[in-house]
Image 1: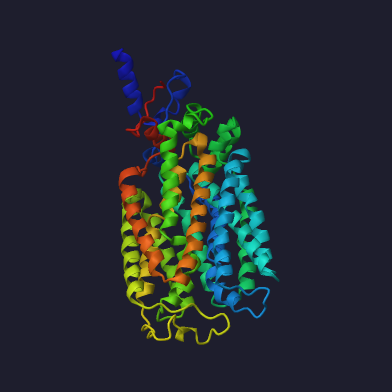
Image 2 (image 1 turned 180 degrees about the vertical axis):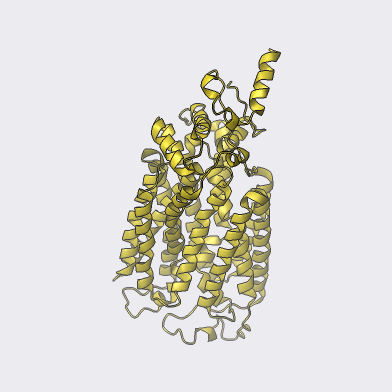
Length: 519
């Protein structure tokens, strides 16, 4: 008994890559399971093709970020349109801003099925169809219904991308760089939003829609040339294709068999999950964590702030044209996401989530107090944009002095969100969800996220237009406190852990360490 125990201990302490040639003679019940960053350094990994695969798929996130904030620079153009068939009032524009989230929820639900039916790669490619059609409808719109339908279709594409791209990236990446790669969807989404803000300075709303279709076409072409997820191929029993895909991703000098065995073991130890089994902690705990994080992420108000950014800034009487202020916010958002990507695998997920929650809380609280004591301007009049800054809700109220305070606190909020609750929520969803339920659960997370975003975005415009910015921002402040508490109590630290180690943590409820012996 002691001899077997000592042998097992020695086997666990032996580096996996040093045992590459020994595995053929191993007993079938003993398998190497852990792939760590140290192993990868000695295994001559080449990341160039992995970077190409990640770049190809995150073009879908670029389009997602672009389409999400499309209403921001075009709001005043559509509300002041000379064509009565296109002109929108505040209620109609609230639907135009929020209907995207309904489409994204539908796309997330569709991805629940498609992720497991046709795989992550084909689901990402399929998302290009509603995106392209949506941009065509908005670019050639002759009536409001075409704008609304087009926006809904681009939302469907965004939801499909959000449910598939992070999962695909997590499954093709190795632990040493998964954190950085997991940040890429958020970074490219921010790049898409910044591109829209910049183009909105010079292009009318129709051309903005036309330009949005180009990244979609490029994405479909490039993704068609990329391999399927090796994890997905192994789950289908296609060992040779999985080996070829992993060798393509890791380079010719990489010993793929160690990683393939680790993935295969993870698959073999999990059967198809049933509804009864979802009551087991190893399944429901990571799913609940992912769903609640996506819910809280949207309840912070990030979507209405991005969608109505120019509206918020103009109503707050920022002493800078709202278009330029929005572009500045977009640039700061990009810098903060890039900074978060560089820190993801150094500082850890939870530290960044704490920092993110605190910055969002402080900025929301400041904006709440500022909007409570400062009279807000009415939004620009659809028929008289020239003098909109001279109108106030009550003609007896003296217009507030222009200030940079709203711009500054908005920048801090965006910076805080992009440092943690933006990219890490997506990354953790892909990391902690169990493989056996990952496709369905990721779609569920996206659906919950975007249904929440729809409700918050639609309610925001109503509250801001009827009352003031004080009411919604007060709610956002409370939610930021809940984000801080949830991170402290419920979120595990996954930095430097393989997907198999993370699954083992939820299986045992106490440790990331995986034993080399089954049973």
